[in-house]
Length: 168
Ligand code: ADP
Image 1 (cartoon, rainbow, N blue to C red):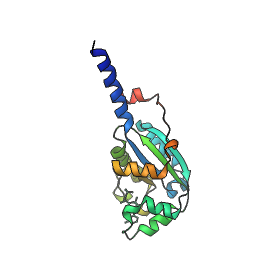
Image 2 (cartoon, protein in one colour):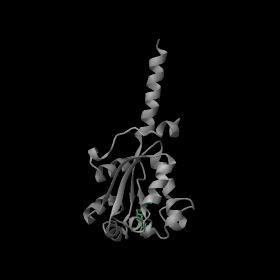
Image 3 (tube, rainbow, N blue to C red):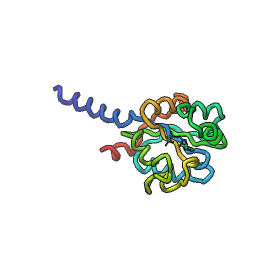
Image 4 (tube, rainbow, N blue to C red):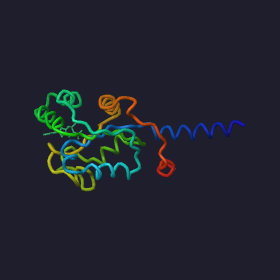
């Protein structure tokens, strides 16, 4: 009699685990201006991750400084914040098992010269100052960045039809 509820509980638990991890991904003004939105989104979509929030915004310089506050001591900080606030940024939240770490793999190394072919920066960018995309670098940053860029009601809760095929 205990078996069935247990099995249901475990199935539920696994589904939850697959849904739990979220990361903040942004296409920077260079990626938007170069017409790379569809190409970049398709890589996350085709992998099997689920889009839970998306919006096009021009961040203020103050907002860019908040986003990159960890880098405030770096010599390129001011130019970086000017650049991020220079045009539209496509802000997104993607969800899936391991999406924070593997999302960074899909993106490639910070310097496109060091990014492997097959990665977004390796295939689509040339220099570090115009590397087209941002992705959270860990679980705490992911939470902070999602909260900075999105209100809770902008995160859309839905069941993806593909989930049972992506996760089995
Ligand atoms: P990542 O974006 O890969 O997490 P960092 O957090 O180290 O990398 O840096 C944030 C952003 O700052 C980079 O994506 C890049 O746009 C810019 N940046 C990093 N290093 C340099 C540099 N040496 N010169 C100019 N811009 C840089």
